[in-house]
Image (cartoon, rainbow, N blue to C red):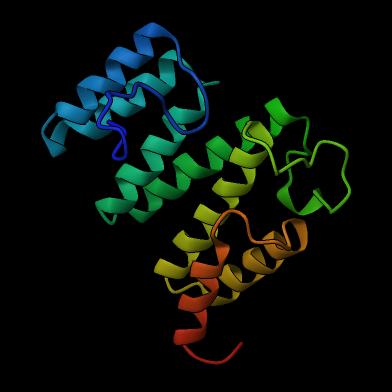
Length: 164
């Protein structure tokens, strides 16, 4: 639902999904917490190219503090978003000025960058602070205007102490 207009919305972060997957995602949204993960992984099997499924997976597992599963979903989503955007599979090979690194507009490249931010957050939550800092520095090189909210992670890292 759109909180501003009150209208029902059927959009997912990361793009569109096939009708079958849309139904699974809606079922997952209504399901008891114990069933959500299996429904979302089923959706991933049905549509391995569906970026919204990876977002739902890593958000769900992170909310359950299932860091390993959240990271697994985010890594798979990162690889798929890179493939769709034409970015290198290795996130460290993506550099400012790469022709496919157009993070301003919605699409696979922006989803890729957002998922990289999710990986920095997951590293932070697992106390892998140097990894979180490295990922954050990479994100800031790629998106110096901080349009994806990486400033929140930077603030959390600062609150945890000086740079390692």
